[in-house]
Image (cartoon, rainbow, N blue to C red; front, side):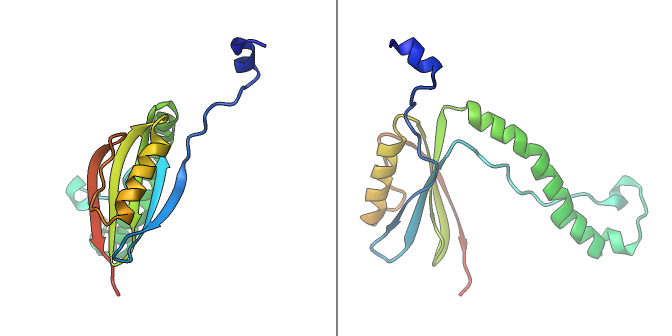
Length: 156
């Protein structure tokens, strides 16, 4: 059999790991989840619709009341997210870029982000895991580009 025929039969392609790939523990006791994904999920953005600014008199319950909170805090962001998600999924399926995220939940919820290609994702995750286990802050990998961090404090 030649290579063309194998490709038509669905020959095995190299597998790119996705989801939570590895969990490591830093010397300070923080546990880090390292995950990989092609999908960059749309951001959850609160609504900013104010009917009184549009010339609509909606009454006190909708202007600054519970209906406004439900609409702007849940419904509008949910509809926006559901509208943007199919586009993000399609973009991720076509993309050759793999996003790597290392996330710790306690004592500070913190995430680090990298991008790499499918052929370097396993080695990049290995580099990142070794760096986190060694206690490095935002470990570097020659196989991935570092894209920054985000953090938020958790309550005890």
